[in-house]
Length: 183
Ligand code: KMT
Ligand code: NI
Image 1 (cartoon, rainbow, N blue to C red):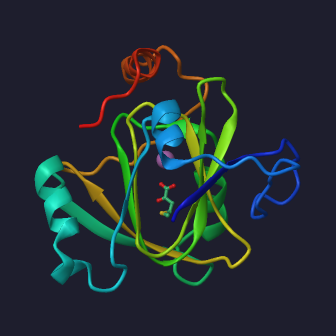
Image 2 (image 1 turned 180 degrees about the vertical axis):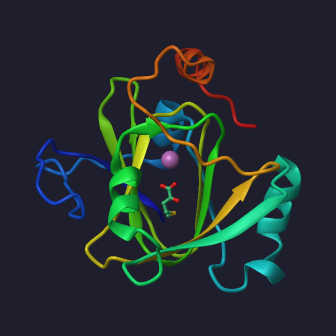
């Protein structure tokens, strides 16, 4: 079961869990209702024979795929990238990540602009909707390997907050206000 929780506001090491005291966890249903983030649990090793990944790709039109490894050894310009990932930003498209090794945290804003931290581990496939403010950090184990999916030619451009005038942001806000619908 994927875990998500509200974050404290301490500026201590971003790789720590940052729970409130006492901790306040968020269910998958609440996470979706608040943010539109969707989640699947897949087999981190036998995802090819399992068939779920293929089905998701087919249904959602994900025809691009590559693999990213985040560690000092594996990622070019590691320190710089780590900073970029953790700057609050949005994208014009979904951010789709299937974790196959290691772990980390995706942080997303709830309706009241509070941070929810989502822990990802092998087998977790997470879809962040276009226009959602978010960020990513490794945890203290300092390693993640993930598959990145996309519809068509990938665009990874981050737009750092504030970019509230972007159409994709306005659409996201409207969907959030109306209530997210599973698609
Ligand atoms: C991103 O865009 O934040 C990343 O690709 C982070 C590494 S994937 C878990
Ligand atoms: Ni991003």
